[in-house]
Amino acid sequence: MTIIARRMKKVFYGWWVVAVGAIISFYADGVYFYGFTAYFDPIIKEFGWSRAATSVAFSLRRLETGILAPIVGIVIDKFGARKVILIGAIVAGTGFIALSKVNSLWTFYAAFFIISVGFTMGGYIVTYNTVANWFVKKRGRALAIFSLGTGLAGFIIPILVWLIAQYGWRNTFVIVGIGAWIVGVPLSLFMKYRPEPWGYLPDGNSANAPTIPSSQNTTYATSLQVPVPRLEVDLSIAETLKSRALWLMCAAYIMWSLAISTVLVHVIPAMVVAGFSRETAGIMAGVMPLIGFFGALIFGLASDYADKRLVFTACLGLTAIGTAMLGIAQNVWQAVLFLITFGTGFGGMTIVRGNFQGEYFGRRYFGTINGLVVGIGSVGAVTGPVLAGLAFDISHTYKWALLLFGAANLVGVPFILMVKRPGHP
Picture 1 (cartoon, rainbow, N blue to C red):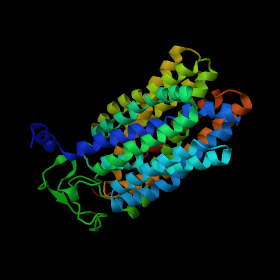
Picture 2: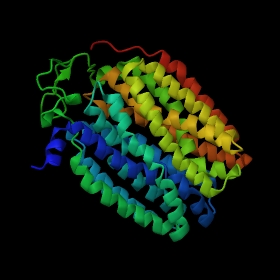
Picture 3: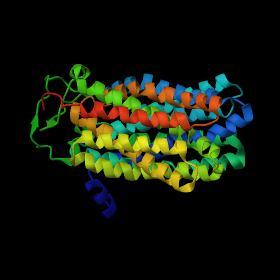
Picture 4: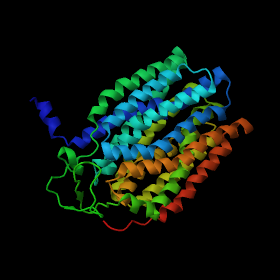
């Protein structure tokens, strides 16, 4: 065994899960989650569809995610992540190639629906859940490092803009689809969902670490009993559903999703309308996720030590300011302020919400609960982009929709501050 191989073996496998998950999320988020804004204008130009009608594709994918995410959460809690990611990568790649052939609004919607199914199974949701399962005390920092993939994903947006300019949007979709196969299929093999069946404990702790039984003495979803480290909350699904904390968190998450989805779909069109060139808007949209990484790092670390409710509300406040700033931005400095505040709040929330969930409800059913929260949050994610597109079609400005959706984030603040930690540790 070489020196490098021995050193790699000494690294806690959870960190390899973090690295592989970050690579998968880098590609999936870049070409799909953030990339939609690069596809928006070229498709409208060719077909002449309204912005509201085109935005429906994004809303359909979020609706699909809302429906499928709870099911995917249950499946990975029971069967693990590898097969789910493998199938998802194949479906997503096929969907992009199908998208290159569309000639009507309905086939456009259908192709985006297929892509959405693929990336719900083979993208951020599953990799996020997997990383969260390998850590407890270090969950915030692990998720923050994992988010580097999402942070760097924004750099794919200028590449997509260039590919579309050089080869057209149809050929770009073919390239992106083949890339989904190349990235997702081999890397899926490294995504082990839980540490215990492989001889590990969360955070790389000793197998002899003190444990307590689960609250109901029930068997874990894997075939092995999973010991729960001391002080780790371990709620059953029934107990979680009865918890006031879950529904308060979901209410705040809906408010956040309303603004986030709208900005991610309309950021380039909104900046072009404000007077920025498409190339400049593409670069700014690409920088936004990188700023989000620093927000994830700062707030992810903070959530390991500080009251997670306060960190959660700080992210809501920054997202509110950033969304409103995009609505009124007319010059470079205002655009920079939008990028800093929105990017930091957006990136921070992607980590803090999962760490918040882990502390209040536990790790055993993390995937199922996360899928439920994402599904409920899709109420905001589905409606926001369409309403913003409709508002533009009527008024020819994004200003009022963005100001309203920014204010919605502030509505979520009291919901989180009312949360109390559920019963038994």
